[in-house]
Structure formats: C-alpha cells, structure tokens
Image 1 (tube, one colour):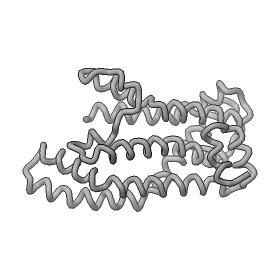
Image 2 (tube, helix red, strand yellow):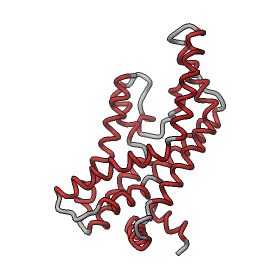
Image 3 (cartoon, one colour):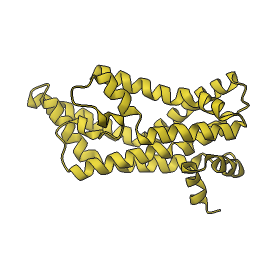
Image 4 (tube, helix red, strand yellow):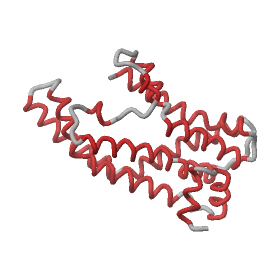
Length: 224
C-alpha cells in the first residue's frame, strides 16, 4: 500500500491503521508527527501577522500605547520560540496522553506497550490537525481580526447558543466540535483494535485524553 494512503487510514479505518503501524516497526510514529509539526509551524507562520495585530488590539484595551508596544516585543519573541519548539511540544503532549492511556489501559486489563500507544496517538493527532487547518482557513478568509477571540472560530455545538450564554456552557459545547467527536471515535476504535479489547474498553482507556483537553478548555473559559 502507498505509505501516504496507509497513514491516512487513521481517518476512516483505525484497525487497518494499527496493522500498518505494526508492520512499520519502531519508527512508525515519526511520519505523522513530522507532518503535524510541519503543518502546525506553517499555519502559525501564515497567521502570525493577523495574530500579532489581534494581540496588539487586545493590549490597547488594557494599557497605554507605549506599554502595548513594549509588550509586543516580548510577545513576538515568545511566538518565534513557540514555533521553533512545536515538534518538542507535540511530542511531549503525545507522551503525556500516552502515559494516561497506558495507565488506564493497565487498570482495564489491556496489554499495551508505550511505543505502540505513542505511535497510534501520533497518527490520531492528524485529526485535530485538520481542525487547525479549518480554523486557519476561516481566519485567513476574514482578512482582519479585532481581537484574539476571532482566532478561534466556532466549529462546535456552541454555534447553537446565543451571545448571552454562560461561558462554561459555551466552552463545553465549543470543545465538542465535529473534529473532536471524530477524534474521540477514532481513538476508541483504534485502541480497541490495538489492545484486542472491546470497543467499550477502548473508549474507556482513551477517555482521559479528551477529558484532559476538556478540562483545559473549561479552565480557559473561567480565566478569560
């Protein structure tokens, strides 16, 4: 099978993707991680002018113009550092997720090894990557941003809510976008195939991954 098409199996056939990963050996995690890092860096570079302008506008609402300019100098350095560190940050997040899946899998009686868990999570990360691409396209088409709020266009069920909806409810429904639900389903089915367990156990052992993301989304809504 074509290697590119084989990697893309994760989008529609996680069981076939697991078989491919096993056939590729120990470095099967590298291609999807490299793709995710490269695309993330590319999107950050593409959106950087809009992001900097949005951040500057937000700072002007909080402080004097001179102070805002000084703050932007630090922010620009931070953005550059974040772009450079993208592969490392992706690997760390996947490792943390892998530890959670491995721990809960052990509790549920699944026999898993960390390298194969990490590899499957690396392939699965291509689904949230699609959400990043969709967000970037939407933001770029708008052309200008008044604030950082516009950097995260809504793709979740919060589209059904009004402007006066509670922040926590909005964050909860925003988190469960089409892409997130797709990701949850693929992870559950993929790990069920990887561990040779029931689909229910597959979803149970992967639940901590998306619950952790939900926690940070809700925490972010509280501090805004």
